[in-house]
Amino acid sequence: MSSYRTPVFIATQGLARFVGALDDERQAQLAKWGEQKHPDGAGRAGYIEKAGIARDACLMDALVNDGGPRWSLILLEEVYEALAEEDLVRLRAELVQVAAVAAAWVRDIDTRPHPMICAHCGQPIPVDPNGHTWHGPVPLPGQPYSTVPRYHLGVEYPKCRKAGR
Image 1 (cartoon, rainbow, N blue to C red):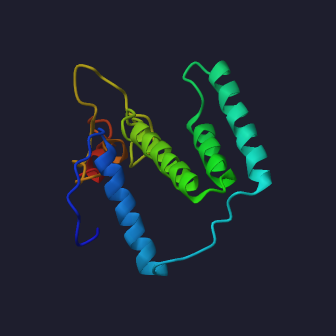
Image 2: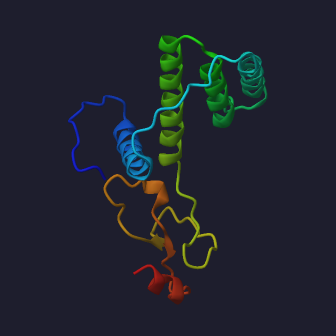
């Protein structure tokens, strides 16, 4: 983690975790590559066409899927819209939209129910609404609950119980 954090009020639920992870990744990139300056490479005609195709795919996906379009298509549409942009002010705005969609996708992942798979044996952990069927560590600060490993708790799984301690 970075050694200095500027205090920022973030109103959107779950966004602080994303911003922290984003800052950590940027710190790693800076440590590896230093400050970078590259040409934009945006504003090319091929990207305008691809943005339209991605937008149509997103709309079509929303029609055929009950849950709306897939995150991959939403993000792809935003990326191609950014790549199609020539104006620097609008390019920046499109890149912010790309980051916002990525943040929303990460939030969706972080708030999904954890797949009940034992981190030791790889077998499903039965769900029992009346009792505990698994155990595992408490999430670390900033760690999404969905990424915490889970282990069988039942006495019929002694190796899994031991592995999770």
